[in-house]
Image (cartoon, rainbow, N blue to C red; front, side, top):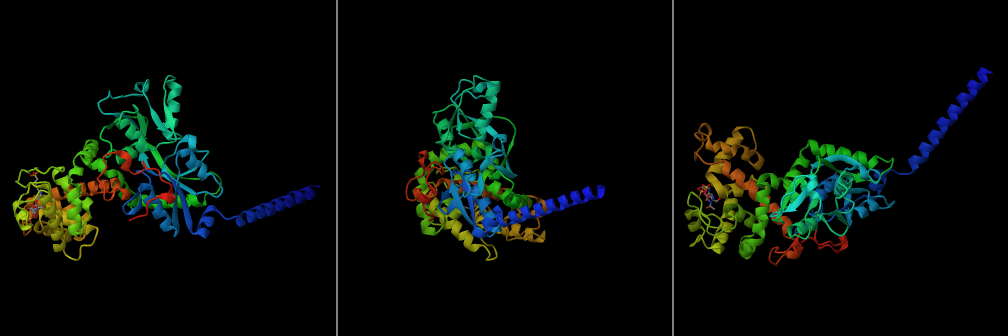
Length: 486
Ligand code: BLG
């Protein structure tokens, strides 16, 4: 009797094992998301058209999310196809469509309310939600100060979720959500006084502060949160595992940090005051000299935005600027350089810009062949500032340290030593303020990046932004209507 039932149990077990194998066999026939994507050779990604995520600049598609996800696609050997959603609800809806995009890379905060619409990857960026107000208004400092204010946030955003949670404690809190706007619109509306307050993530403010000189941070609403990529919810982890492995690699090999520095680092370098001062000068000063920068750039075959960035670093675009050392003008030419470049009046902005353009090309040509782009441009800037002799001294010291004298990253570490006797006494040209070119190059690179974002292809040939219609992301074109890269 026992033996019989034991046999039956064993037989039942075997049957269920066979059943499981059949089920597994059945599953194996259904390809995983990763297998499907690999068979198609295309990674379809949904994002938002905004400066902190994805937009078009002169060189084509760009943006933090775009660059990161492009690297992921390249690693998998896939072609990247970007689609944009008009709002967050649409973005999550597309992600959940059976034949829709498989990944959302859109500056998404991994929030509780989103767990049923998406599965999130490992985090790649920490951001803080910030309440934004207009300079000149009374600064709100705590949640109670939000009462009675006109507040607008993106519909379906983590900020809307935060305000909904806050409303449970502060029932009088009133706010609106809009699906028709992007972060840049919210900031513009605060900047222009159309609304009192909005909430955006710190990275988005960092990216946009340079366009809006009146927006200020009131206070951080809550703790830092994680941005992550998302896939459709469900059991299939095949793509998610690849995403996580990629993000882990990007953390480890430093590429994520470099991307963060490039997009968001200017606030660390300029500070918020520097960023909104830049925004003001971009509107008030640059338009007066933009034509000269473009003409000089064309005549000397350099990027006009690099010249403009140099001019901002040198003089904040002020033609009568004078340094303590008697260097003068918009591009801060020494008397010797001015004479060598045929500049008779250093205070004349057109002449100064032309002289500066000629000189940067000249010093770049003097650099050894062994220095390749993009480092070559950074070395040329350093030489413009400190002179070729001192730069050569720093390169020699760099080599003596076992570092690479052809890499800006290495030479910039050594340059400050030119101001220390134990080091400069060993050099040919002696003492120099070696820290100055390090700041000089770092700042110019930031300004250059910012100018790249604000000068859109459709702007070419026209004057620089005086109104926000020129800003990336504000003009919500569909992907198939986007201006082709120049
Ligand atoms: C540069 C010259 C270089 C020169 C170096 O000084 O000026 N560049 C220009 O005139 C464009 O030609 O190199 S050298 O010819 O090999 O000697 C070194 O003398 C200018 C720099 C100096 C700097 N700004 C352009 O970047 C300056 O003004 N520093 C002083 C700052 S402060 O006011 O004292 O704080």
